[in-house]
Image (cartoon, rainbow, N blue to C red; front, side, top):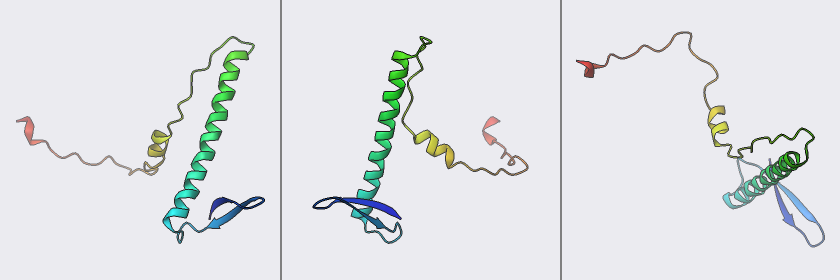
Length: 96
């Protein structure tokens, strides 16, 4: 289930939509809202890191963080189980 936040007359309304049956536009809005939340978490993380670099008692500067998670996502999609033996190599005829 995915939250879809809408503004009501007096308060925010949260509708829950099923990922399997949700129409494309409400699902897109829900995913955009979640992405915005991730962005604000990254923003606060950056503010905290910058504050630490400016005010820590050790005079150190932590390196900036990379907020591009694409490599992390790719790595998570790699297999977690491996065969007991390496695959057999095909002979290369181009070395003649």
